[in-house]
Length: 198
Image (tube, rainbow, N blue to C red; front, top):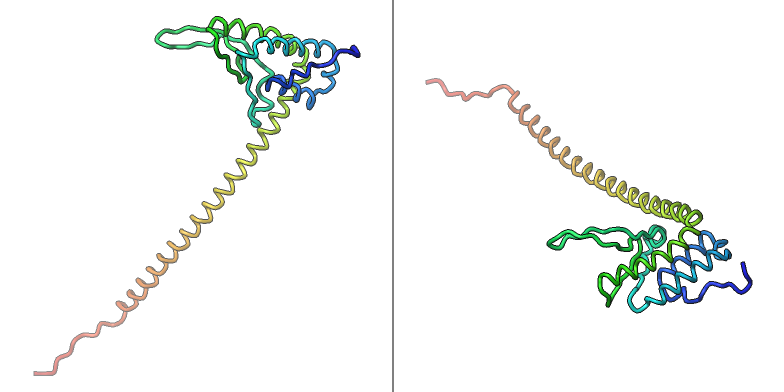
């Protein structure tokens, strides 16, 4: 890498580029030392600065940290508002575009996507598999915690059902004991009424 080539500090201006930088630093720090990556990253930052009044990126939630903002697509999205139409939109990137027409939105989105695509092609082989592994590990941990919680809940339900059943069984057994005692009374010889002779 050229001694004078550095990543623009303006990457901190946008949640998206800040997020990309954090992921690169965490998962593939060597990419931040490669000249093509720095050039592409700086070009993306310059493009975003050009639209900073209209285009706002949003910080991904902690739960989706490794699942969005990298594999960004610019695709046709279908809408229906009395009639069906499609328009191209950025997907996989939390963002807002404000104060412009629909046509201008598409120009801005297309320009940003073109600049980002250059960076993505340079980092995807390193960063995407690493993100997928991280996301999988996090999701598995969350799912295992959820399963353990549900198992504990079911164990508690079983315990309550057993306690309830034991009480019901005791009540039924008491009925049986009572009925058995009554039956023994009926098994005694019949004592008939005697009358004095006339």
